[in-house]
Length: 196
Image (cartoon, rainbow, N blue to C red; front, side, top):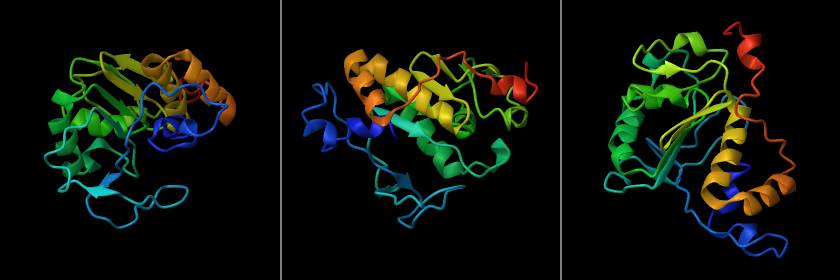
């Protein structure tokens, strides 16, 4: 979100003169099963803006699927899987971070595609219908972008922004948040976890 938040309607990017023209503006919804704050593994709780039932008839252009506290793909919420599966045919882009790829995999969306996920839990995902790429910060297959660990999500977001809104806005964003964006194959963690 450090990168993508600057594309949100009403962000400082629209009002501060140091920013170049924002070619796209997004409205973000933080969707959950209910409106209760969502605990995270590390960090502040997230406050949902809508529930799955409230967006049942909404088609999004882009969804970003975060990971969670599950250890295997079998622990993924069926409600989230159903949401991803129903959204996918109409999406322009589907992005996942960390074990969020497991949610996307459970929805059947990654079948026959290249993807990656968190390296520490990489061997816990056993779907044989997916070409899991061990050494990659992120993987792009068509309109589906998957990243490995949490910080790789920032690298993926940087690359996705560059693809969607161009280099000028993305470079200014990266420089303001002081993000050192890693390249797609710059992945020492695959070796650290014995995957290559």
